[in-house]
Length: 380
Image 1 (cartoon, rainbow, N blue to C red):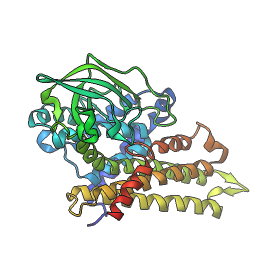
Image 2 (cartoon, helix red, strand yellow):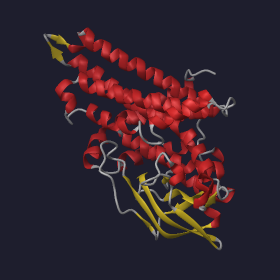
Image 3 (cartoon, helix red, strand yellow):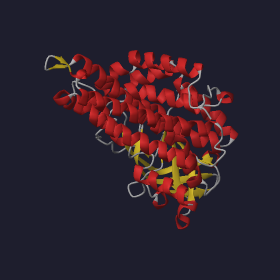
Image 4 (cartoon, rainbow, N blue to C red):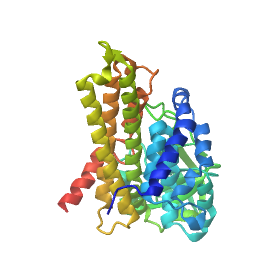
């Protein structure tokens, strides 16, 4: 298995880099400052047909391989991490539909995801059920040809912005994880957004509470069978975590690029600080760690592309996500240090990179949970 990019992937990376530099990066600081959804950047991504990358061709998508998808996310995150997670969240919401929904539902929704006509959110976590998914209290009660959903989901990316919500709810509390089912819910009556978080990072990506009050969902909108929800959630996260790693790699690369350019222009003791060996070694170590993270992310993505023949995706995805996000936190902290006092101000983007990097260690499974997954694989 090769992790070298082919000519098409290299060309795509170059196009993405130029696109992000011109259409995404210029808006990043403003949207972060205003804590506003990055509408201009999202529309630019739609113009580039980027939402189609994850969707199969039969439903109007480009059906790009996972490595190409990782390249896209990395390049967008290099310019604006909030815009990259806006792209990622619709994929996360769409994966259960793509892999487990009926053909009718796929035909109804996937082409609209592909064009960016609609966006989706993934509703798994609750106030007391983050890493411990089996503790969720959101209920779905069968009523004829419908289910009635009641409960609250927390830390939901794109809350209020998204048109659809992939909701995991218990159809049998006594069965714990085996009693969880998955539903496709459209924004409408009974779907409320009472609270939004004031976050450290990803401030241009809205994160809020989604409350369901007697929301009726037709039987056709149950994804998979009753009780399949936990399996669907874990299957989805295993195929999404590598792209969180790609996001972390992009954040790191943005910090490395900016810090390197700053070192060439900033003078101290009569010469550019890039001439100081201690600082050169810091920058080199940042790049070395990020290159290793990128390779691990690509390996996990390539494993998805070949169908996970050795059953290592859970292990590789957890390893890639945790290593890349730990690297992003370390690299961005060092980038702030390289800029000295300027790095601590909002005049330069490295403090934003550092703030944005932190969440990659937390969402889609904390890095502590990822180490549980890795250890379980090693000790099985």
